[in-house]
Amino acid sequence: MAQRQSFQVGTGLFILLGFAALAYLATQTTSLANYSQGASYDIVARFTNIGQLKLRAPVKVAGVRVGSVAGIALEPNKLDAKVTLAIDDRYDKIPDDSAAAIFTSGLLGDQYVALQPGGSPTNFKNGDEVVLTQSSMQLEELIGKYLVGGDAGKTGDKAKSDAAASGDKKE
Image (tube, rainbow, N blue to C red; front, top):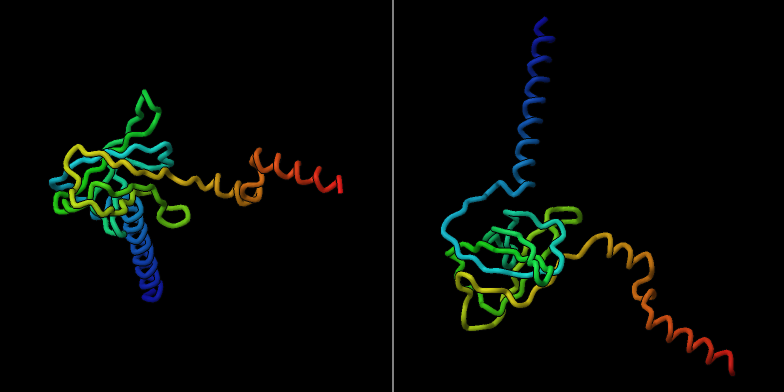
């Protein structure tokens, strides 16, 4: 009888630890961990495609989180995505000629905005805009390019190959 009771206690502890591990993973993958919004300044970046970028997604410089995505809106005139980045005040030395790009953490992970610092002596201030941006790379587009053979589907390449083929037949 004592063996059966210790087996039940062990099973219960195992299940409890499993739920604790799931809760830990859920907070780590949804960007809720280490989320503390202190004093910050906003900069704006415009992208033609943001993919699956979400509010509160990290903003990183050299892999270090320096802020988060504070807003996403569609520009009605240009039909671009206007992304507002809230950068922590302690990171006030980011050059104003820096570039912003949307990357994916891992193969199927969440997306984040990466800032690649430029070389300007002046730094971003509240309300400034990132001029150089790179939109999100879609996994479906990359797979399609790989399967089709890269640039083989371009019309200009087809015209060149047709001309070369007709030139070969004349010889």
